Length: 245
Image (tube, rainbow, N blue to C red):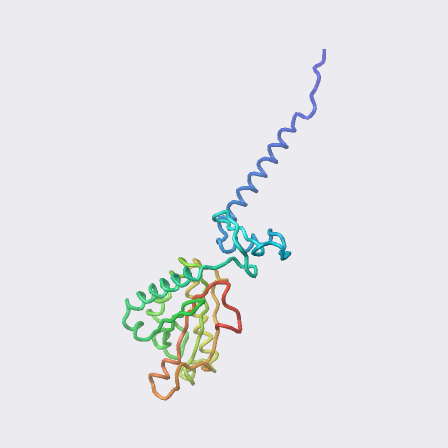
């Protein structure tokens, strides 16, 4: 008697393929979540919260992906801890101070300050660049290693601001102070990114030419001090073009 054939003998293969596909998608999702910074996770999670209808006590809530707890939401950004931020700014400033103290030339030609959104490191052009050019000196490269170290360890973005002393462009091949200070800011920013450890989206460069002197150019020391590069470390959500720059 002929043996009866069973249909559907390959259905398990389809089910197994679906299972493997689902597992691959799951592990891909886990990898993506692991790569996203906690601050970004918190902001993304706000899209899954109900709209604020004004009835709830305390307004909308945001899910903290690290603690799995709900916290109040203000203007779409999770509440910050001012004390923790101030402590972080102090630590960053102290770390940069140690970098400067390792080289007396840098220490004598620089300054550090802080405000409510970040830390500012200012270094004179004569220690950062060869005269009239955007070529970094050896001291500048060592300093920028310290700048990169801060960005690797802390969730801060960086704005590099180039300033020229009035007429400083005349010592090199640049036509204006704008071009000189812009090239220098870009050179410093590029050095921060040279080894690929920092995302380019975290670093910006801007030129001010000779429009923002620190002091009147009545002495040589004042004039040299007006030509500078400023490294401004700031919270990613804090700095907008047109303010704080």
